[in-house]
Image (cartoon, rainbow, N blue to C red; front, side):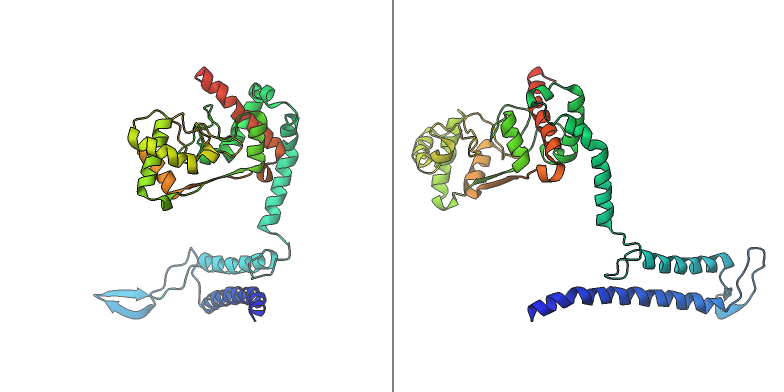
Length: 314
């Protein structure tokens, strides 16, 4: 019964849309036809003094017909509507005599853009990333690709934000070498930090103080020592015994005072507590299916070049 209803539903809504559209059109035609029998006023004709019989405070309501140009405009609108509905989609599932669709137009525009710009991107595809990163012309193109596809998360200057990595420093969750960048852009990344709220507030606080100690930040030494035991039980498998992280897993380095999840107005301690209590789930979408491998290669070179700009202070 459910399958029957699911199959019938699209047909029902198609009929519903067709009916509403045609009823509306019929009403418009009726209004136009009702005024067709009345005399219309040309621009050079004086207005009549026929009234509707309504009068308030000595003010009468005239019953003049609409100007002729206005009446013809209504007629032209009806004719245009009939032509449009015949040629283009507008009546439910009817595709129109021209067979036009938004998707087909989009695909045509994408194909045209690919034919025009594809050879430009392909020219740089086989150039090694370190070499490509030094090519000023290529980096101008790559910069525009980054602005269109990456800046919404990482920022125009690629300095990231709360939950989005800074691409201008030398701190990388999965590595900043060419092959690692290509893998990140091509396949995407998914990082998960489990929530440890079930350990209780005391354990969370001990772990927080221990992580602060790893970065040599102000901390409670006694609680940090207690947290070290819990760290060895729950955290060392990903972040390592010394807290320096593991790029193979995307586990961050906890010793360098660089925090991916920290709001601008949030203290380091509060950010760590929140991460331990609630966990984190970060997703970097794969870009290759959207922009293609040639563009991915250019963007990887652009990201690779950012470290040199940062080192030079540009």
